[in-house]
Image 1 (tube, one colour):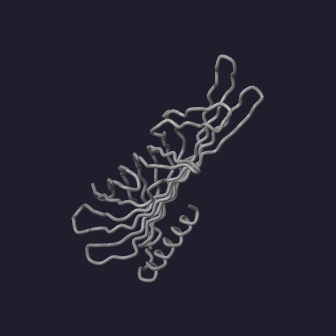
Image 2 (spheres, helix red, strand yellow):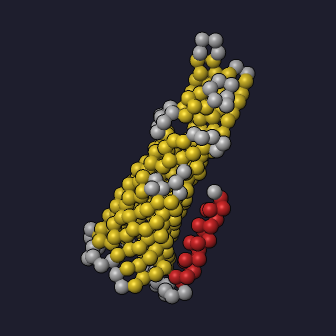
Image 3 (cartoon, one colour):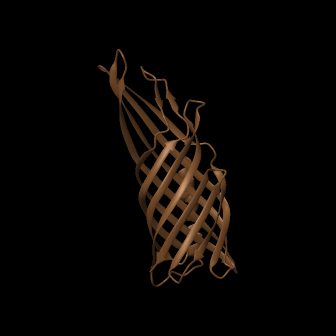
Length: 250
């Protein structure tokens, strides 16, 4: 999985350098700030197990982006996320087996966003859109109360997501830009479950990763006014995802 992320980084840098050979830098920086909300459902598998589940997560975030060059935009993302597994998880490697239900957890999310529009001709252009999100660790404690024993358990969950879209844009409409293309999406996370019963402490780690890495992305960007833009996006196959955003440029 780490090798794939390094490959993504190399590809993105190569595309950016390719664009820099033909496109001049801009004199004045353009800034964009906006809000984005998304719902995603991604199928994940667990190491050393046949277990599969769906990781469902919603993101509400603020993004600030700057056009460094005519062909390159850099953005930072910060926000809030709510996530849960669709089905209960059975943890049997502890002295006392536990069941993790579908209870929702929440934490902060942080990320980086890079867009490189490295080729254009007429009403069409091609862009690489890369994003890395880190979902901060969530920790939850629960008491264990049985007839003959008592104790407590702790659940810790964190994960990250890397996305690379190669999209074809159509600029032929007055106020709408349409786009579509292939997507590579990677989710990798760690679920740590610890248990303390009387004087016995134990812990197990469940690493999970996305099952389907490749998919399709499509969307539209609508210019509402001179400085306002609304975006809608759908992802399929790698994950089922819907995203809406609104940005103001200055």
